[in-house]
Amino acid sequence: MKRVIRCVRALEILDSRGNPTLAAEVELSGGVAATAKVPSGASTGRHEALELRDGDPGRYAGKGVRKAVRNVEEVIGPALAGTDPEDQAAVDGRMIELDGTPGKSRLGANAILGVSCAVARAAAMARGVPLWRHLAGDRGASLPVPMVNILSGGLHAGRQFEFQDFLAAPYGFDTYSESLCAACAIHRAAKELLDERGCVLTGVADEGGWGPRLPANETALEVLTAAIERAGFRPGEQVVIAIDAASSHFYVDGRYYLRSEERWVSRGEMIDLLAGWAERFPVFSIEDGLAEDDWEGWERLTRRLGNRLQLLGDDLFVTNPGRLERGIRSGVANAVLVKMNQIGTLTETFQVIDRASEAGYRAVISARSGETEDDFLADLAVASGAGQIKVGSVTRSSRLSKYNRLLEIEQRSDLPYFRLMVPRQPADPQAHGTRLTSGAKL
Ligand code: 2PG
Ligand code: MG
Image: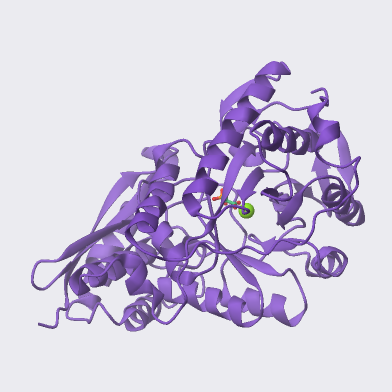
């Protein structure tokens, strides 16, 4: 029996920061129903699709999503009734058409994305296949390498230091579950090191990583490298470091303001700083190393570091096919961060992933700093075969739902673990490792 979409509902729920977000429910004929919950960013890119908020200061400081809920129930639902849930492109195309704006500002990207994902889930259920298999189509599915948040700064941790995420990517293991186990050991070792060195821990940050007060941004790299060693792993060989600078958020009047270090850094100095770090630490990936509209700076950065580092565009590309195309044409970055709610539909998300892979760019599937218990992202990462996933730290259920779903997929399938190719790390004996265990003082 061919099923069609019978009805679409929505609900205002809360995300991991206690802000409202939207859950959409799609019911098919024959009684199959599925839900999807939408995440929300804090360090958002200027060019993201619009997250529709009510703006009523009397409720949730204006962040309510009742308008978006209404748009699902009164506009999107009736328009999709009778549609084939297996034709994701048609469903998403219809919603894009109904919205009619480039940034999805009429209906809201939150309203549209909730429905887009719930439709996919309902279709998978109706077919009786796991979501990842339904999404994968002809793509070579695989289990991704987790890029795990260990230390947080910037907007996710009260701006104790400016660079937003320092992450561990345990890539030199045979399986996803071994990598996850390594990440947990590194997370624990980082806490011990911070305690021992008398560092003020200001609590756990928005994505579950440690949010310490540090004397300088570089100290985060020292601590993380030392934590990898203390946990018993070889930095560079088994575990590499990824940085999300999220630099647009400390970019002021054409320069970068490192408030914690009381200094300003020009574009050229920023490139030198990142290059220096990549020489001295086992850094493999740098996200948003320069500001979101500095295309010229990005070209320089890519020319200088693109052959040895993964240069990842988040606020730069905002999962937008047009911006990614511009990047590919002008030799900017070599990887794209993929966040579904930056663009608003599953179809456009896959357009970005597929175009990246065609152009030889890597893709990293990413959560937002405001998340829910929804684990859709795990299936997306597997289905896309992108090979890397970034969903925060190894604490908090909003993060663990994704890691745990990946454990489940690993156990129930015979999918391969993605082989992440990492360029050889610098051989400088003064570099990472030895120097750091002997104790860089915080
Ligand atoms: C990022 C994300 C997730 P946010 O910058 O990559 O870490 O943060 O969701 O706040 O944009
Ligand atoms: Mg980012």
